[in-house]
Length: 344
Length: 220
Image 1: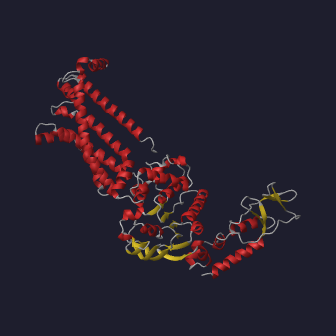
Image 2 (image 1 turned 90 degrees about the vertical axis):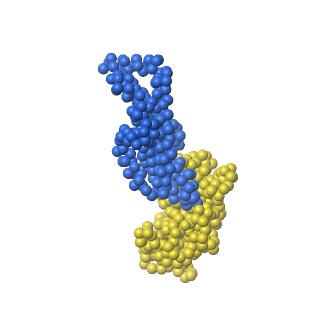
Image 3 (image 1 turned 30 degrees about the horizontal axis):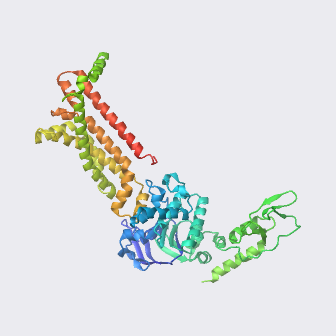
């Protein structure tokens, strides 16, 4: 657990980066710090591992005041991932990942075997180990950055806009990987981003900062989207925040019915029973079959696009299990909103 | 002109010029000895200074001013000055050569240190490296190509200038230049000059080749 108490940071040039911050980061969860640039989110993150020293107030990690610990030793016990990865260009990928274990005095052999293990954990092929960072793509470099941060198995992971510099497709992949890893590892993660969608996707709780280093609201994403504390938060979350809330709910408990037979539109399946497209006698409209794990937002999108208003549902193998009507999806969307407003 | 070149060729090819206590081989060895020792002393002074300025980021103006100071310093004047103050010894020659080499080493070392990506230094600190570990494990290896360039430039400048040892009666390839001038023997002057140039260029080629070999893994 990480606890900020009345933390204040004023830089030498007189600007206040963080103003009277009290914040609790629960153990084993992802806390996302979000806000526009210059709002103090990165400064807040960097005060946790003493890359920045607070002007006043206390920060405790696992109950211990960080300023009472040796800064270098503290940092070795906290994973740190930065934008552009910040890998050491003169060291191989394997040696980059082995950095902290070696600083902790592990033998080279043990550090390297641990590093090799971690490359696999973050989804890199073993042949990446001997390469140099500049020989990897941006997404791969970011994975190495995550592996390096995890090498000594720290309980806390600080991530400063780690996926800010990669393209949207790779970013989504990396987010998925992080969620998968987190399910396995249950680290206490503090994640900085300026991307609201990323925050909603990854966060167990989201802390929104306003320029001048003010924490405006800290809440789980659903609560934040349903009940923004003020106009600033509402504006920051964007006009479609109602839809964003739907991205947090899955289709799992929305009912399905057998596919209709003999209307104008027919649902065409392949021989294995996987849906291909909607068709009339002379046209075809493509479709996107949905699984239970897909979000209500994806379902709404598909039901709006579908010529029948029906969404094809499939199992893990892509075989049709039934269809869901636009009305059912809308009813569940409405219920999701009501629940988010009512639950405290 | 053609005759001069012919004579020069004969002078360089002449076997008797190469051997003996005042032969080309001896002069070359002296020349290299002066140059390497001077560069080594300059490195012992310039490297720590450049690393310190680069690592702490303090005293950058020293590095910058040192560079222009070094360029403006008249080497022969310095030799004469130290000679007049300290009497006849190799000391004035070494002082002048070291003074010539230090700025190139300091400024290149400093430039190499400042060229290290701040994100990489930040990451190094963030992983828990102490100041000296960041310097040794990250900054120094990353600055090394430029540091080596500084040493190479310094050595070549020193080789080209070490002829001044002969100006105050010592050896080296400058002997031919100054003796030739005194004896109005243009072939000997040219021969000495050509030898100095060849040594400087050869050292440059060898060292830059070595650099390329060492840093072949690096991006440009």
